[in-house]
Image 1 (tube, one colour):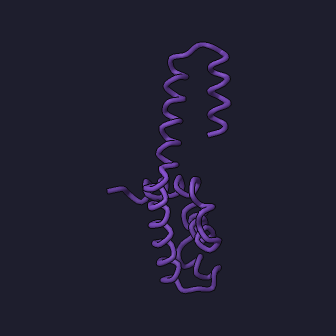
Image 2 (cartoon, rainbow, N blue to C red):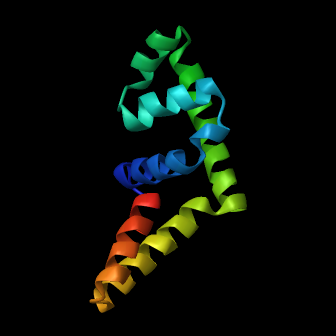
Length: 108
């Protein structure tokens, strides 16, 4: 089971890959909570809804993010590419290869 910090890190990573697939309200609320570290109460005041409505929306949004990852695997593939870039960097001394890896990392 993940602790709260690990879960926040994972959800932030999912948001990087999938936030544009969320509704504006889902994106805004998730960013307030997971990126800006606002409390449910603070978000409820900003959005003019109940704390429970924020909680429910976040729960549905997180479920949606995990569903997208289960189907599209963008986060998993990105992590695999980053690992491969690091492995190649560790064994290569060729400047051209290292420059290409730098360029690839920036695209990632």
